[in-house]
Amino acid sequence: MTRELHVAVVGATGAVGQQMIKTLQERNFPVGKLTLLSSARSAGKKVLFNGEEVVVQEATLDSFEGVDIALFSAGGSISKALAPEAVKRGAIVVDNTSAYRMDENVPLVVPEVNEDALHAHNGIIANPNCSTIQMVAALQPLRETYGLSKVLVSTYQAVSGAGAAAINELKEQAKAILEEKEFTPEILPVGGDKKHYQIAFNAIPQIDKFQDNGFTFEEMKMINETKKIMSMPELPVAATCVRLPVVTGHSESVYIEIEKDGVTVADVKNLLADAPGIVLQDDPENQVYPMPADCVGKRDVFVGRIRKDLDRDNGFHMWIVSDNLLKGAAWNSVQIAESLIKLSLVK
Image 1 (tube, helix red, strand yellow):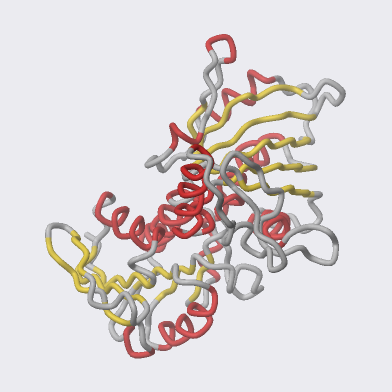
Image 2 (cartoon, rainbow, N blue to C red; image 1 turned 180 degrees about the vertical axis):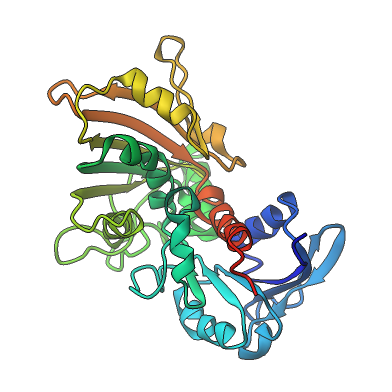
């Protein structure tokens, strides 16, 4: 019988924080005490958890006394400032920001892919980028069975990945356009420090800031995180990340090359149909394929449109969709916490 744990959620009033709280409740996670933390501005709000109201407190250095597991989703600067302090006070931190993802001393974990990496944690565990999580979860069964030699991905990412302000901007712009009113874009693309663009009825091929190599930071996250999670530093990976006027649910067009010869589409479908955390939706004849509108509120990763490349026998194309606030953030974080318990890594 697992003992009840003292769990803290940092960023409790944000979109991901709210999903973390909801997921803890839905999973019957062994929460003996729940501490909800936020900025001073949001402190004092009340959140319902298991039928009881919990008052949100301001996050301070001393907020983590007695905490067993702290789920962070309040921005990288907050994680940098508070996560080490939480660890000093005995907590294990699962951080949903980019603050520690590429730190060589911090495991970057998707439980379906590299759960064993949790054994090497030094108090902080990083939750990968949302778009990376769903992709590697779908690719892991293929990598294990057939080998993996190349990954090319184009993402079609929801505005919720940029926060509540981006969701509001999408809705307000769409309303203004339909009513033939003028508006001034102010939020997207995040990282667009020179210009902001219309997102309603549009596609913006920039997520985060451009790097010197021409890729955006979001694209480099996918590239570097995929290599780290899969322990394949030499794996060729390339990404193009695009923001679409979708509220929730990231979609990805992924091309891979495998090492084994003679693999059929049926082989790939059968493998993914039995893979943990994966739902196969692939029946082109009846127009069955994953779509973001259908994945909202679901913890799984949905895969479809699997087809063999026309020029390379070991090349395959697929379409991967998942709720970016759940498997891409809150659920993967809680899943990591469940794995810590399963592996007896919580003292």
